[in-house]
Amino acid sequence: MKSRMRIIAAILLKEIQDIKKNVNLLVMYFLPVFFTLIFSYFIPDMPSGFALNFGLLFLVVMIGMYVPSMLIAEEKEKKTLEVLLLSPAGAEEVLIGKGLLTYISILVVTLLLALIVGLEGQSLLIIFISTALISIFSIFIGMMVGLLSPNQRSTGTIGLPIYMLLLLVPQLASISGEGIMSFLAALLPTTYYFHIQERAMAQTLQFGDIMLELSVIVISIFFSFLALIFLYRKKGI
Image 1 (spheres, rainbow, N blue to C red):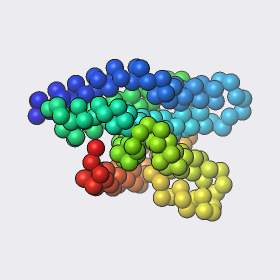
Image 2: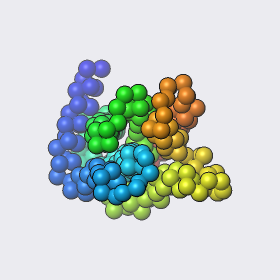
Image 3: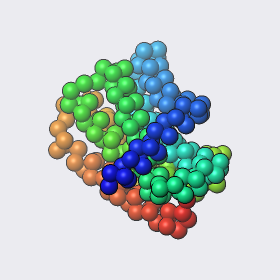
Image 4: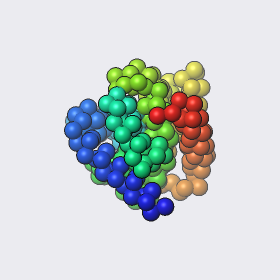
């Protein structure tokens, strides 16, 4: 167990060094902070909470999915993944190490966004925990995109429709009301995450008030994990 943890920690440190050299990924981390700042301080009459809602949803979808897909596809394209797999690190350690970098960075940026808008107390705790959960789902989806992509460029072709669906549909459904958009939104875990954000910033919530939303997110994590395992066993790394 200790040796496995050391391997995962070594892969995590490697990913931190690699991501410093990847301008595309660094820009992705900057964007949710940029959007939250713009919507909070430079655009008048924005709906209350919109800046944080959009920033967090962009963070968990675009970074949570885009970053792990790019990291896996980059390793495959440069053939460095084969070197990793020939080392003491197995496929599980490689995936955990890559996912852990994305997961930790999302939580750090979440706290930064909350600081920008002045969120605190119970609302901050609820949003932080729900973000920690939905990020696991996002990372699993991103890893599947990375497994399906032969190179970095193809991650956009394969992943972008998924990213846009999970990012835009919850917001459009909240505007349009009933209809096909609401039906689609009800199928997406990011919709329930979006609802948690809206309710947490609009009123004082207890965890018991959002058990339905949290349950949907947890179920989504479970099924996305099963899908990732199935895809890995079928396609491999």
